[in-house]
Image 1 (cartoon, rainbow, N blue to C red):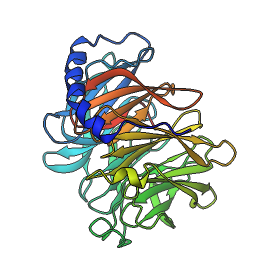
Image 2: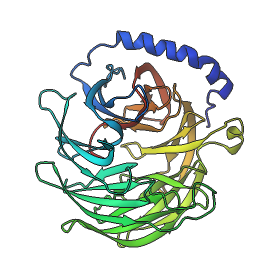
Image 3: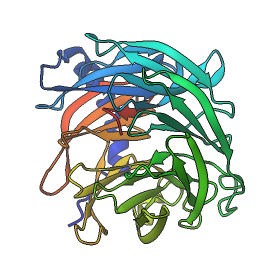
Image 4: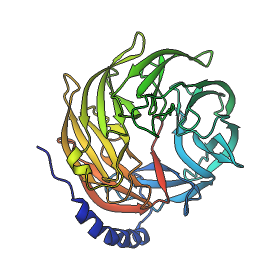
Length: 389
């Protein structure tokens, strides 16, 4: 059964009281006890952000410690973790140059980062980055530059060199101003580590690259067409490795695809709206931003900016097909990103424009979200990271 979400009018009326509650709650947060999880927060370059922040999530209550500055840097929008958990990587600006920066997570002080080294991307700033399962490669997607870059990583976690820069070509031309050129928005490794996949918002396609993990190079294999005018933004693989869910930013929809491991193709099978079209008529701006799959493989979640909700879907265990559970207000503004903690109990939703990070408990039976009552101040939060993804 579809549960109703808070109306836009109600949200606007209660929002000032939410901000007041945030300030009160921030003053009463206590240090998380041992049953806690590190949370790393990537931020935009707008005031009052100063860089990468760190907090602790209490796994019993969903309460967050006040996020503290872990590394001062300009616009560390997206973060990635080394599989060993020893290093953190950020797509940021260093001395005015769009770069990838490697940080060492300080032993004995999980909230402090020490910069190790950095490399210029060479084609504008990256909107997303990912690290291979063996920790040998890092890949980035450049929305503005229309390209994908490959960097090798040394055994000690340092960045080695940029091995490759691949430019995408052409746009679908369906949505004027957004699809006149290629715009890679996400990059990630397939579960079998045989391919790298890149949703390109401008091309209305997900590009599959063959991966030479030893040589550190990509080779184009497939252009997988998605919804016309949908603008594929992010995607995630199901734990079974057989299904992929592609989030379409412009059409606010989610597409289920079968993954063909032999050649890396994606075969679309179902597309569902994250928000009903009639519900978007009252919004001046709306776009889908992030998709996450619950560790159990039973639920998938998608964030809706403008509408300021997260849509919960149930996944049919036999077919992978989606059905809507509910839409939950994020208790903030502009949820550009959110994440699910490794235990699968808590979802943290980042409000970019409200400078908030709110926690929700996930019902393990139904998949519904229940607001914990806890929200922390997180300046211009646009990335939430727990561990290697």
